[in-house]
Length: 136
Image 1 (cartoon, rainbow, N blue to C red):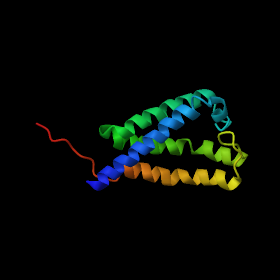
Image 2 (cartoon, helix red, strand yellow):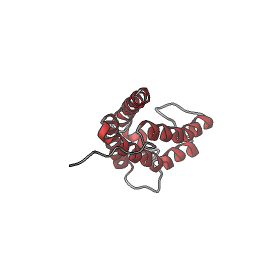
Image 3 (cartoon, rainbow, N blue to C red):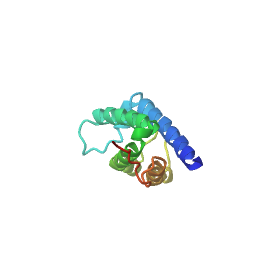
Image 4 (cartoon, one colour):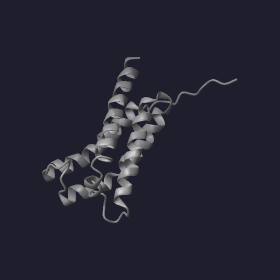
């Protein structure tokens, strides 16, 4: 029971994080975030807006227990999909939020993706046996 509550709290914290990122970065700093989209991808501003919408939807899914497990899986895949943007940012030494970061800080940010994915999968119940509703 306590473990379930702790996971729920983490899901709420993650939801707030992705809601804030979706709104503040993807919609209020669209041009800046579009710069980290790797150059081989077309329509960087559209990508930023679509991913912002996704992050807002993920935040909703993380707080809705019925959708939490599926959201955790899809959000983890999403974080892997955006990893090239974070790598591109580190390779090019791009600023984050108008702040210049050291190479260590940029690469540390890339490395943090993996524990973040693990935390999302744990908090969303990915490794737990899915509950099957009784029928009839």
